[in-house]
Length: 294
Image 1 (tube, rainbow, N blue to C red):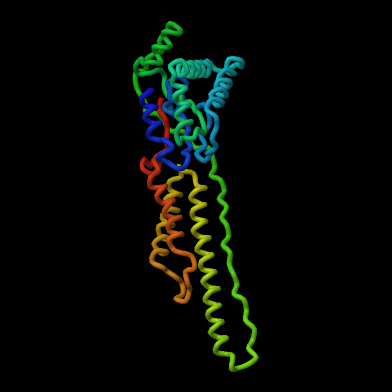
Image 2 (image 1 turned 90 degrees about the vertical axis):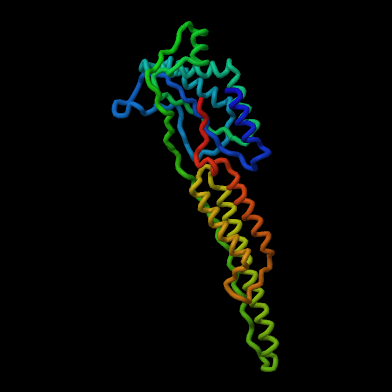
């Protein structure tokens, strides 16, 4: 397990990624015999899973809060199954501490791009299928071995209880061409007409470049504001970025007289930066959330 944690730390080193990746740590354990009559394979969870909560939290503070929550079971009249589950959850935390795994998990979040957001326990079975390091620690500590289960179920996934945050889009700035004064003298009509055409072209060009800059900035801001694990939303934004980048590179303009005042390479580099970042994201390659199985 220590080697696996070190491997994850190397895979998600800060030198390989630019942005933090929010991560929920889930500890799976088979702790009690309490089950739902209508769905015996459904897990019982300790903690809430919010896919959209990307706020980074101190790992040790969450462990301390979880210990306090588990200890309150002994001070209140709860069912024996709940007491059994919380007792084994506490013993699991104690084993992680004594085995040195808790320190390694904490360093995984502090020395990599993985940002710790939440901690959960999953009680999804009645006893392990074989005795491992945790069972041996229980035997040494309490002179007993956990019961052995006759079957193994796959670790369940938590149900998302959060709501996506509202997205605020900036309105593009539109400029109205300045009206021209009427000519007084007919012999000045031609040069003034040429000057007006040049001024109109510049104004249209300025408005076009302002709108293009706003569209590029809005797409980049929307991509940055979207949660890294919202793959479908990010994929849609990236597709829009690719289409816009192709249009800019081919110098697509609504009218022939519009001048590109801003170099197209500046817009393309902004879009390509987000496109490259998304293509290198491990969440995009894996097409799944990052869950740690213990």
